[in-house]
Length: 122
Image (cartoon, rainbow, N blue to C red; front, top):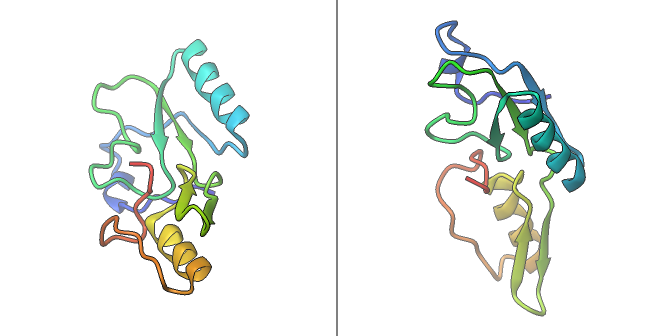
């Protein structure tokens, strides 16, 4: 299920999404986005965690919208040989920090902020 981190958006004065899509693959992500446009919905992309501004959870213009939540597209791959990491848009910063630390034995770090629940794709 989707997880709303900022509870102020539970207030009835904020518009709610008509639908929340949780794609399991890149193909489903693309299909969900194209379907939203065809059906006349604005799409909000939530990248794993929350955004500080809450832009992925509400609408300011009153138009119908849906959320495409990337929380299940959260893979973090660390390649020690090339000293790189590939991060899917649904990974939170906490996921990135933990995976980099585990895969490198604490030898490498990743600077990205102080809030582990924010999405890495914001």
